[in-house]
Amino acid sequence: MPRWSVYDGEEHWRFMEKLEARIRNHDREIEKMCNFHFQGFVDSITELLKVRGEAQKLKIQVTDTNNQLQESGKELLTEMEELRKCRSQQRNIAATVDQLTLCLPVLEMYSKLREQLKTKRHYPALKTMEHMEHTFLPRVNPYRFCTIMVEDIPRLREEIKEVSMSDLKDFLESIRKHSDKIGETAMKQCAVTLFWMQQMDVNKFAGLTEDETKNKCFWV
Image: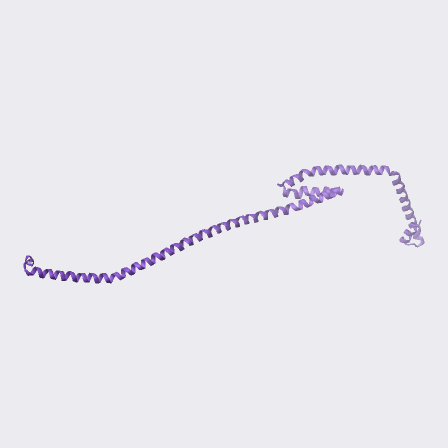
């Protein structure tokens, strides 16, 4: 049948009915397909909404974790800084202890020197001073108290010299004043000694012991 004959007479209506039936059939197929995929679409949307909620929760958790990490990092940095300061202080304390270990003998010896000067033990004081000057003070040379001691040693040495000379002069003056009495005492002692020696020689023949001779001389 030629194509143009479809539009003539009853064939036209027949064609339209078949076309409409075909359209309705396709509509039903489309509706079935839409109904079939609609539930999947709804489920997908539901899953997406759930995922969005979980993603939001995860984002909040990540933000909280990051904030906690930042705070922990700050605390860690603070503790590390404190640890660094403590270690620095520990090193300083150890260095101070080492230096005090060197300084204490010097201070003890200086105290000993002052005590010797106070009690007028001049010769031991000079020995202590020499020991300080050549042995201990060079070990702690950078410190101010060491510089003061080094500068003070010549003055102390001169002071010892002056005091010693003064004591010597007083001693000689005392000897000069008491020379007569000293001479008399010395002569008496020499006489006693000579007498004792003579008695020792005499008593050898008398059979007396040395102790008996001394006792005898004592009562003379």
